[in-house]
Image 1 (spheres, rainbow, N blue to C red):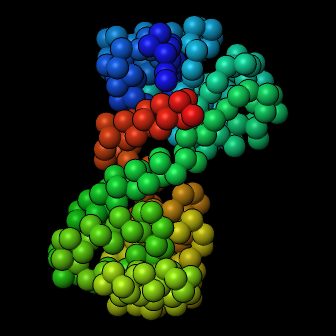
Image 2 (tube, rainbow, N blue to C red; image 1 turned 30 degrees about the vertical axis):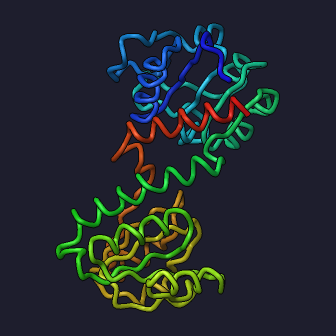
Length: 285
């Protein structure tokens, strides 16, 4: 059980973390915040310096990802960049820190290895629940950028992971003709059994005006891209650096839209709740 008197500190982040702060405060917890000078927070949250947050908080929550540039705290609502070097790491020694993609911290300074850091983005619960707002955001982008209707359109999804499954289900729900690519024979079997077209990721073929990539590896090489028609809309949901040879796509006339961190952009309140519930469960365990 989480103690009612637990004091949380939220350092940095986008709209997801701003909503997280509001939600924690609504649950009755004391919340300190840092790096949100340009955001409007719940009046019950107290904005402090990073040193004060580290001193006063019992549990610290960092954003997803903790850093974008590999050197500073990911804090788009903050006024000044905050380096994540030794001086910052020393503030959190002995303090439980929850964050997303936290493996980047040790690469910045080895002192982070002495901080009890827990990565909520690696939890299966988080990944499964996050697939829904990601898929919704991908559909929203497609509906805005594709000149036709998704209803009746031939759509290809590369990858049958959590996001691929959610996206295929949503697209079929609005009448798209959905084909999904995979590598494993068992995934291809499930794709067929669920009524989708099934193709191998190595040879997805062409004839799809809308393509969604969910695989965090270079899937769309020049060779694969050459089988797509010029003007194809390719929405890349894979984490950086993505799964598309962008230079080749541009030369071949393929429209590529990188779509990272969609939950924070299209459903920040739901995304904040997912982070909160995942951390609650991690703390209870």
